Length: 469
Image (cartoon, rainbow, N blue to C red; front, top):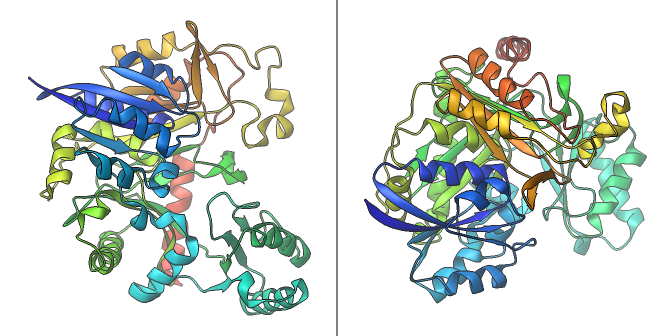
């Protein structure tokens, strides 16, 4: 078997799934060099070399890579920060190592304003109504407040406030969730406005899907549809999070979708891709440049946002189902000849467990928090035993966790993801929950309704109602 050195830039469970998928290769003998945000126990035990760079600083990563450049054949980047900061540009400029992620110029999630303007030029019908508020255009707070309120009149207050730059101010805010008065909305707006441009767009009713595609610079290869659960708590309550879980049906569609919706998604993203390819040689879009949050509405498809990286958790639903060797897929992306990818006709469900502080859980549900367990080590032995017993139909991927000696501890974000794989969503969900329930310690919690029959039926009924409007 041919030895292949692979660099993985890691943040959490998504990258643990990537490492795991590489190691399933039957054609290659991978040696994996992991640059991690923390001492992820999964990656530490599987990497040829593992280093922790908590801020994923580009210059520090580059230094690590250059010392090993003769051992690494290619690299893949999961988290957005190093992509936005131009990690691929830096590595490829200094070495002959090809990196699978877009270049800095095409890290579309770096600017929500640039995204909206791109979509307006290429796929205007998929854009919600929006207005950009640029500090350069307003002299006083009173002036911008008047402009904001005038726009809210047009939207009947049903608005979403988004900072241009990721993680600026208070971030995305939604009418009815984060604020219920114009005063509250404007306070949220100002916290973002202090950092630069802000978008206020219409709040849209519909059902969400996550579209992802592998890209070799010339071709887009769509991946099966997934559904993410952004809200922290059951019944879609609580704050937006990084995603508490997700599911995929056994085919390419979600249960509430019709084939025409999928075809339209592919057409929309292809138009955006074609527009961007005119600006570069194509390979600068290598990787997963389109991880698009679509919302299916009575007025057709709208784009909520686009990310220039694999989804977390959505890519975890898909990687275990690849029929093709993932290392071969990566080589084809680099060579520019990836035209198709095969998948097992299986369903998958991913559920995350998180520490009590995450999403404000301990404040909302203090009665369910075992204070004696908070901060204690996490026991994964029984969960890993299930991985073996089910022959991989359960996958356990630590995220915001770290090794301290021989014990594993949860940090502050989503701690661990468990994927269940089966012939139906229901069976996959049972497997995911079995793995989740086998994880003990730390008073970790999870949403209990990820991919539930009730939730899926509600989305099907809602979509049928919207289609008849």
